[in-house]
Image 1 (cartoon, rainbow, N blue to C red):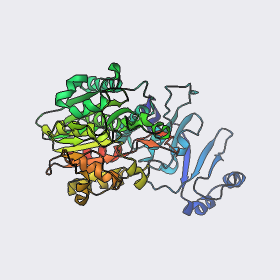
Image 2: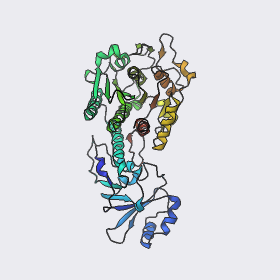
Image 3: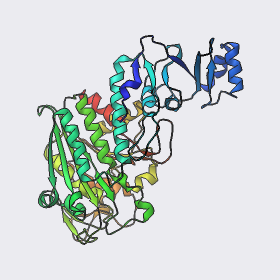
Length: 461
């Protein structure tokens, strides 16, 4: 992974090229104050003051130049200068006229991140941004690294990222922070975590299912449980997906990537929590021993589930993991999951469908997302749809017929494993960006990570 620290440095007056960021509404006013050589260059570049316009501005000497970007992004946007982060020549830059970098430093860093596991990419020269916000450098670098971690994990092909590799990622994180890892694998899951076992049992021995747990922090501190769906590849099981639906299913462990990255931020900042990270890691494969439609599954909580769709497996493994998390009596529980296509139909890729059963937590989480420009959209845990989970032969089904309110019924399924008094948030996140934007390439993406981190800092920092 790129060394983000080298790309964001304290501004101590060292030589650097200026970046002029001008809002379209102020472009004419700005241009009128510039010397003739700058106005000529702007005209030559056909800059009209529209958002996205840019130009290289000449200085007094041959090697003296600066950059103009016309931008309508607000000062609080992380993506304000991201379009320049990978487009400028090697060198050191600062915002002109003492402009504060603020949130824009994050976009500058992430614009220079590349996923390079499978192809050689020309080594790009570093573009260093100077900032007067020295106290914020470490935090910005950490968030950039956490975001890049999510992207890299999601972009990795399933042949190279199965349950064992997810376990190795947790082991590496634990080693950095002297945390304790406990793993329950294979047939050992059958009694304690029967739904995780059922979903993952058809995979090869090398890709055996497992529940990966990490614990860190002072037991006297408030207990924080983070759960992430770790379906390393989802064929759909016997209710097999069509090829188009299977194409991106390497990303079905995106929830685990989010939870793992957030756990890293918690430990790096040494928040005053007792952290419990849980990742149920499986491959939903097809074999003679695959679980079947119509099977009735036992759960860790003791409820029975009539399996009506083997492609609704994520909520099954999360149910057992959440049940284990709840046994620790957490003060806060957050789960991340690439859970339903219904959430994407309703909200598209950018907005994680967010279900919260505690009003204070809901308000705080949504406010945190707005503050850091990592938007969430609250969806209802609508009691009226709870009847859709009824089964004729078991306590509930995993996937109701008809397809109505799919994201809501999935969240209601998970709610069966959460005590009513426990503050709990469920983020049904896409973990994938289908079209590139400045600082945000097509591929794996972290949605809701920064919002959740901002919430945790405020509560436990």
